[in-house]
Image (cartoon, rainbow, N blue to C red; front, side, top):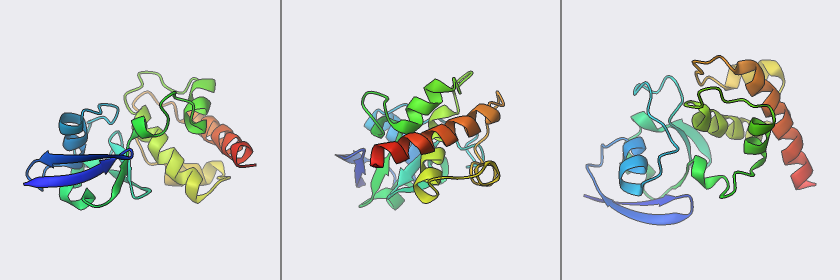
Length: 155
C-alpha cells in the first residue's frame, strides 16, 4: 500500500504495510538514520520524532498514523546543526556515546516549545528518555541554555 508522508518538509510516497512502525519507514524507506532504534517498546525514547509538533516514540507508531501529517526528525531541525538545542548540546558536551541524543534533543525541543523556561523538576518530569551513559545533569544544563538561546533568537 502506498503511504504519503511529509518528513522534514519533503514529500515521500512509500510502499509499505500500513502497520510498519514509522521508525523503520523513516530509516529504511526515507533514508534518514538519525532517529535510532533501541528498545522497540516505546520506553527509551531514542526513536523520538515530532508528529505535527507532538513528540512521539516512532518505534511503536504505525506509519499510517503519520499519513497527512508533518513528521520532523533530528535531521529536520537544522542542516548546519545550529538549532539552539543542538548548539546547547555541543556547548555542554552532553553526548557520551551519543546513541540516545537525537531522541533526547527532540524530546527537549518539545518541552521547550511547551514550556520556554522549565525548572529542573519540570525537566525531570517531562524528559523521560533513557540515557545509558547517565548524562542527565548535562542534559538539564543544555536545556536551560537552549531556553536562553531560543528566547534570544525570538527577541
